[in-house]
Image 1 (spheres, rainbow over the protein chains, first blue to last red):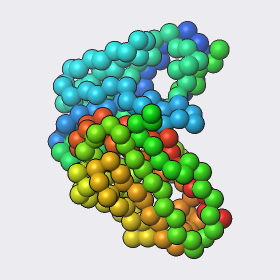
Image 2 (image 1 turned 60 degrees about the horizontal axis):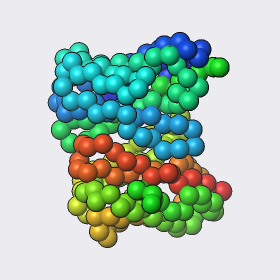
Image 3 (image 1 turned 90 degrees about the vertical axis):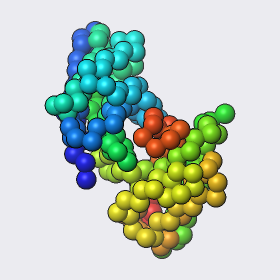
Image 4 (image 1 turned 45 degrees about the horizontal axis):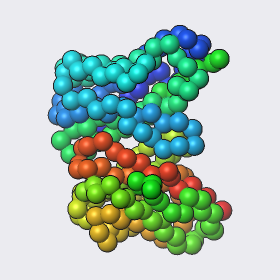
Length: 110
Length: 112
């Protein structure tokens, strides 16, 4: 069983504020780290695929960083909006499979 | 057109019945998956097929049997349904193993 942990489990943020949360994963046999966004009553959709140590990816107000040596990735949301409310999943990919974390559920209050 | 489609979307059935959930992808992907969402919304891999060959079979009761007639389809058959099988089941596909995963909309199974 691969240990992929996300923290915090949930967070509330005021509209307009910025926030970030963490995904930690094994630092051995690293192939890639995925981030997915999962809105209520929908299916998860890919945000980023990160493969290189030091990678930074950005999509609008959402960005992510990757540290493969220490086994963590941060997801940042700048200027949170209500439509950012969702569960954000990370997935660690090693030699042969992809394992999801339990997710961080973000609720943006207007 | 939906990229990964699964049917039925909702299924309510009695304990002991046998049921199937069908999945089709029109993305031309080589790899297909079945995931189970548990009560805490955690996505657990059940099966993975690559080019119709089973490559991942996690600890799943053998009442669950996947069948992949071709690369574009991966169906899930469940025998002797139990109350604990109630969950949302997601089909998914990816271009190859370890690539970005594209999910279907989920099938809500309720066993009564």
